[in-house]
Image (cartoon, rainbow, N blue to C red; front, side):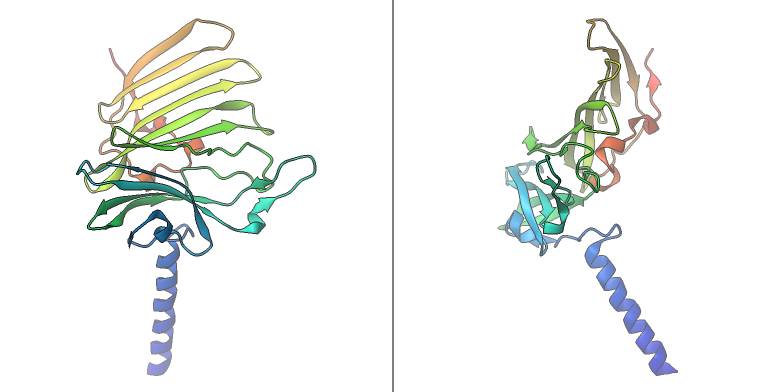
Length: 241
């Protein structure tokens, strides 16, 4: 009986270790420290884009990078279409110090993945990573080839704050290709200020409203989720008088 219990316990511990190595959502858990962006890449993944900048404002260069799974099965070939890579990506931030870099945050949901056939939309990420004024800026773009008429850019701005990588800004512009209606939203999560603008692409007339958000502290990198599904309205804005 004791031998059976010990065997079951060992299997449970092994399963827990394997789960921790892949993360709760199935994405690989990156190593805690490395000397380069390549050092964070798990087996079967590659560095797609990497930028440096002082995110922690300590005078030491930090890393922001996107890893992409390098699986040939994730490249879809169709007649009359260019190859479509539907392999997932991981966005990560690592802070420099002591000759190496320490992982400060990672996320595999913010940069959307194309549909299983690779044809429903254009690749949303095209080297859209930068460090600007100490903030991490991630830009993705929506353009549906089928199944939707919406198009437009999304921009997320993060900074190192309170021991985490937190969302401090969000901007999105949308154009509905069938109707010509347009909308834009800009949110500063540090000041709580939000503006929303609506109009049409065939008119210079726009309506703008200013609101306040009430959410504190700002969301961490891994709490934002899919860029195209980000619901800033859940922040319960109220119109500023």
